[in-house]
Length: 132
Image 1 (tube, one colour):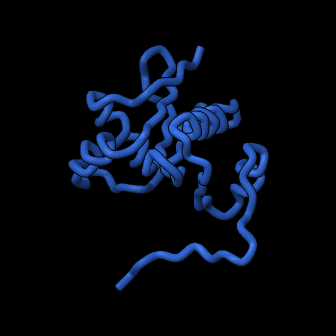
Image 2 (image 1 turned 135 degrees about the horizontal axis):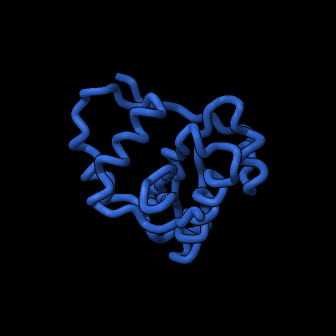
């Protein structure tokens, strides 16, 4: 049975493993940043018998706006509703703080997944990344 709850500081190695599995960091890369982002974001983890197998976070001002990101489920556990449960838990968490604007930027092809969870494309808006 999959359990969902807040990711704690002691889960940092498991978070790093999921980042590597997703291709977001390379093997041997410094993972010191993970401790800082665990402290500064809302995190929900999916656990199978105590092992972290999925995660996501919300960057939030705790008043009006939040951004969902870093949603990943280990390959062996995909297509079971785990990612959707993580996103739903994060949305409920930030909405319980009074946040009424929850956004995200999904990878191409994830539109259907996020639409089923209540998200929609923002017509007339363009996601951008600072690169100077």
